[in-house]
Length: 479
Image 1: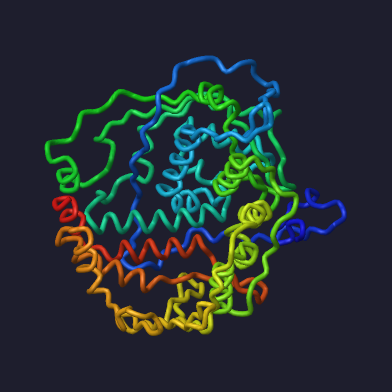
Image 2: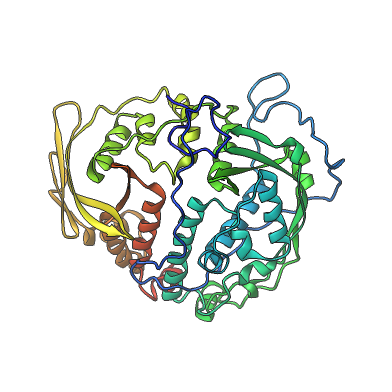
């Protein structure tokens, strides 16, 4: 185990002994034209989560560090406690994702992606000012570049596909739906910020409000889709709902923790590090002082096979080693704690004997889909799956059909749950998309890694691409 060697540290911020290399983050390539099937560039629209109503109340004195009481995850006596859900964090993350999905490409095109700041407090303060001033495109540039890339790609896919399916109206402004959300008085306690890693700092949000108008008319769905969802007419607007951050802080016993990460000397807000921080807090664990270094494979195929075998072996360390160290930097840094938590996991005993894949290109990266797989179950039985068109040929499994095709699955699903004809017609197309799943890999310095985020984006593209205009109408009518 080594101390963060997989990921760059800003000059002057790393190990004083000089064991950390200088930052080598690849510069984000923005904007890029998507190469997904049936994916055009359209603005994105979203549906906001319902905000919760909290009573008003002052937070306390400003500008002073707080004594928050027991460490998060533990009671005063030291016993672990079950943490409550964080409605405010969920709302903030949801809104930030909406900003990303709505205006990512335009933001980088117009502003050049220059949204970092010289300090953790500087970037969260800038983000708060952007949100309060409704400058949603500028807010987008405050997000860590590797995360912005993924969400931009995902936003492009969702927008174009939902417009193709006649769910979203074409031609709407990218951030139109965000007009229904108002941010006010967002304040961070700079003195309470925690530097949990040399280039990761947790900032503390302690005050402010988020208000939503909840007007269905603000949602840019097509008239035909709205009529299907609300056959009795669009429901009337609800009363504005407000989340009072200070009240949430009092109720949960501490501030809202939002992670920032340093990339090439600039600080950005990070959703992935925030998620990792909350997971560690809920487990009552501190941030590890070491990281799991990236240790790739000699080829794309070896990387995929190695990750699958590691999963069968319950070897979480090897799984993390084989993930893209830039895309999944937060996973590598939180990895030692995750590995410790999974220490009791048992191997399945199965061994991959042979894996054959079909190689395709996804935006300049190598993606692999299944051609055939042979697995030894550890007890002398070998099972082989072979992909032939839309079918899987199965051998070595007693009682299993020798051949299972996508068009059979619709009838199998219908027989089990009594689904509508629309579902029976759709399932084979979705099954084909799943069979076509492409695991995206990346190469760095001759070593190959699996890119989970890019794989999810590609799978989303294929699943949505399996839908046809009218499918959703049929599903709603039949449901």
